View 1 (cartoon, one colour):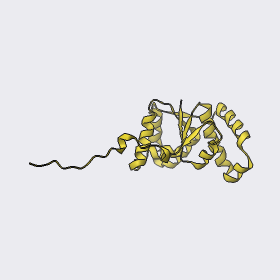
View 2 (cartoon, helix red, strand yellow):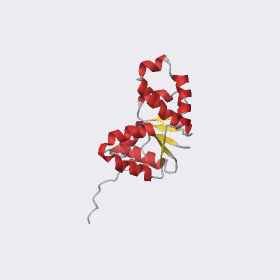
View 3 (cartoon, helix red, strand yellow):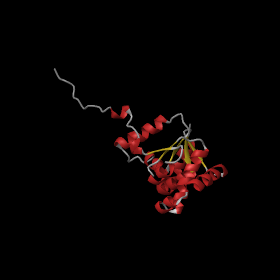
View 4 (cartoon, one colour):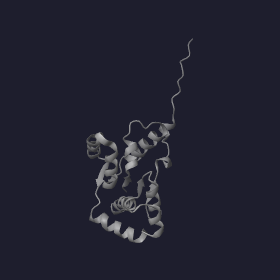
Length: 163
């Protein structure tokens, strides 16, 4: 079953300055889904490309060359799914919490995920987490990911004994 990576996951995943446990979690996430289709919704891709600036072309080439990632558009199938989701969930409580534009953007990502059969969205976006609570879709933040066992194993700097 495919999974979805939101923009903030992509931003950290391709940021070489991310180190330590967070890097280990991201690398473990990619390894865990090595044989899974990883969907990048076009609204997430837009947000990602805005943030990477001049590295846009290079990173876009890496994404499109990868067999793991597939960029999925907000097309007719996703638009229909989104309209149904908004009709059920655009209530007064939601209107007060999130701007209309942000709300629709998040729901486009969710609609793309659901219309492509995804089971999980990986995202650090709190609004996306809130929106998906009522749906058959898990949203998992980087901090919720386990540190892979291999990354927990630290090398000891021992000096060899001398006779």
